[in-house]
Image (tube, rainbow, N blue to C red; front, side):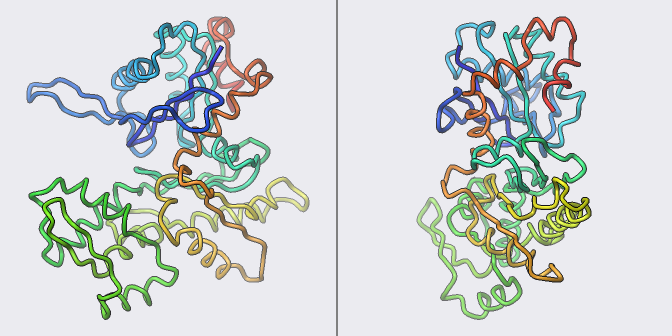
Length: 356
C-alpha cells in the first residue's frame, strides 16, 4: 500500500508518493472561498500556523483529487508540519484525517527532522527559510529539541515586498504590473546575500555598472542599484524590512550557546558542527557563506562549524523528500504510524505518543 506524502506550506503544497525522489505535484496552498464580494483567495497557513481549518479541509480534498486518490480509506498519510505547530493543532489535523477522510494510518513529523533525513543525516541544526517564516532548530538522532526552536516571521514574501518598497523609494512604479509576481521574479533571478553588507551595498551604489538589469513584461528595463542585496539583508537585520524579531545569525548563535551548555559528552554538544539550510530562501546565492562567516566571527575561539545547503536545486522540497524516504521503510511504517484502530481507541493521545 503506497503512502501519500504531503507538506503544506504558506505558499505551496507538495504532494506525492513514498519512494519518489520529488513531489509529483506542487499546488498553491490557497482555497477560493465565496463571499458577498465574489470569490476570494484564502491562505489557510500563515507564518507556519493553520488559521482556517475549513480551508485546510478543502485543501485536503484538492490534495486527494490532484493525487488521483480513489479512496482515502485505503491511503495512509505522512505529513510534514511546522516546528511551531501546537499540540492541539496536531490533534485537530489527525481528527480531520481519521474522522472526516477515514485514512487507515497516519504519521506526522517536523519539517526540520524530515529535512535532515533528506540530507542523509539524523542530527544537526536546521535552518528552514521559507515563503512566510524562518525556523531554526537542533535535532539529535531524529528527535527535535523544542527548547532550541527559533522563529523569525520573515520569508520570501517579505523579501519580495521589501524590494518593491526599495524600488518605489527611487521612483520605480510597478503598479501597472502584477507587482507581487514581478518582485518575486526579481528576487529569484537577481537577489543575493552579501558577505559584507555595508561594503558591498556602498560599492553598488557608487558603481551601478556592476548591478544587474531586469526586463519587465512589456520590454522596459529596470537598472537595479543595490536593491537586490539590500532586500535580503533583512534575513540578518529584520528591521530593514519593517519586521520585528531576531536576525538569522543571532537565532543560530542562541542554538550554538545552548548546545555548548550541555554536559560534557552530552548529545547536543556536537550538533552545531553541521548546519543545514533548506527552504526557498536557501536558494539565495551567498546565504551559506554569510552564515558561516558570521558564526565564525562570533566564536571567541576557532571551532568546527559546517554550514551547507543541499547540492540539489530542489532543496526547497527537502522536508517532503525526507518524509518520502522515511515512508519507504516498511518497518518504520509498521512501528511508528498511528493506525486507525489505535486512533479510534485512544484518540489524539495516540498521535502525541507516536509522533514526537
